[in-house]
Length: 281
Ligand code: GLU
Image (spheres, rainbow, N blue to C red):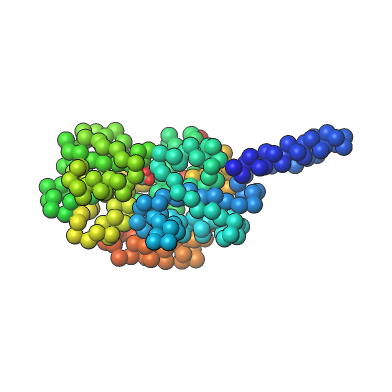
């Protein structure tokens, strides 16, 4: 969306240069296009994950990811009124960045080698871990290996299923839903045996309905939450990393983690994560 405007502007400048007889190279073309150069910023966040990205009673999107997105946008120089936060699902993240429907994604979006070929990631801004949620009365599941042969729900486009099957070679009966709240509904209603994804996501749902579910609390991966950016936007990636660094140094990250997850039993990490680097894959 934003790049489209820029390309149009560049084309107009080129045409103008041709009309007035300037060599095209005198037009500012040397600099790489970046979302940093546009007047506004559209950020994709989740809408159904309590405490991360969820709609409140007024229809506003709230949560840790939303606050991180707004902090970063501010540090990138965007005024609050120029930042639009919009809903996105796991399955749509790469496509919406590639199509320029969104400029940035802050949506429990793990940095993976495959995704890096389509998207540039700033961060990580937090490292979550995959875990397992079962119904409270289900005392048989003590770790991910106990899911062998059981039905496990994941959001479409999420990498959590691959972590179990390809990553650990555990043969589960995989069920896909359109989002994680649909998985939680299926778990509550006994349609699946477990939901397995990032512990921050599971802890958010657990806190919504005390006594309904149990977090197994045997984490088994590192889920490095990246800030998804258009592939190759190295300038934005470097600025995002500066913003994340500042967010940890000025205490905002610790405050936000405490605000959103302080009441849960999660072990929160308040030191700045090691950055992945901005070189495009
Ligand atoms: N962090 C994992 C991923 O990026 C699972 C959660 C999600 O899909 O948002 O695939």
